Length: 343
Image (cartoon, rainbow, N blue to C red; front, side, top):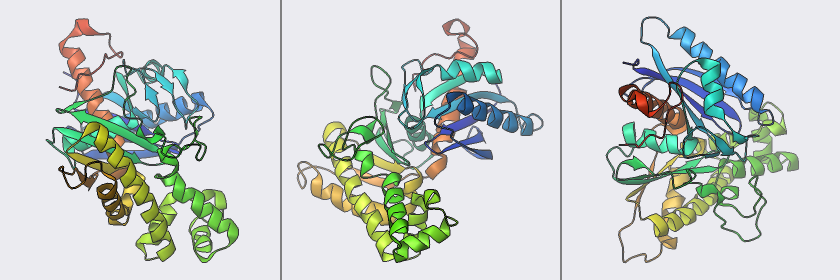
């Protein structure tokens, strides 16, 4: 029987977060690295180093590491082994599962990072037991996850839930994916980063405040600095977040028209803005919802785990898949798990 601990890796556009996760979704140890987006080999090295550090810390006393789960920001194929495309990391048909398994000697499952976050919230977090859930993950971009009847829904080719690349503004702002007017260009952390850096270059009072918070470098200003300023009462920063919330609500209304979930859970780093973001989002959602006033409205709630949901969900999916493989040896090879049914 595999050990009860698993390592979760969450690969975002700017950082790689890793943690040892137990059976109850508790993160026992954490490590953080940067995402070298232009160098796939460097990303692999960073993942391997983080796994090595965490395994060394937990090799005695608290349990064995059973598996590694990776939440990757991009399109993951239906076998959960290959990252087909990642708009923020230089991966094209990258066989990530096999490379990490070879590097670490552990069974590996690769999952879309938002799918992993949605699973964490359904298993342990804000929407435990809800049958039909949509997760919107707000970070550098926008990821998404769908849980139907308590099972992750990945789509026929494994790439469902890429909500951030729905077009909301025809011929709008250019996106890393190659299209224009994608939702994540208007309702993600990158919006705050873009506006914060522009304000710093213009020398506005908020821009100077953000520049000081970032240590004097415009390039080091990120959305979290804007969120902090808003939570401390800055009216301009609060207004920026409210505008993002408006766009968020419009997009959620579109998702409700297509999927009709009972609950929409908002996660990712930007969700730490709390009601500064979700209040405007709920108002905008109610205003934009098709059939408003004549149908039940989905609840919009904050994720419980915030920025750690991806690594928690990835670890749990990997642990469960490894157990399934262990109980059915003929269904796969060690270190090469097949698709997890979610049941």
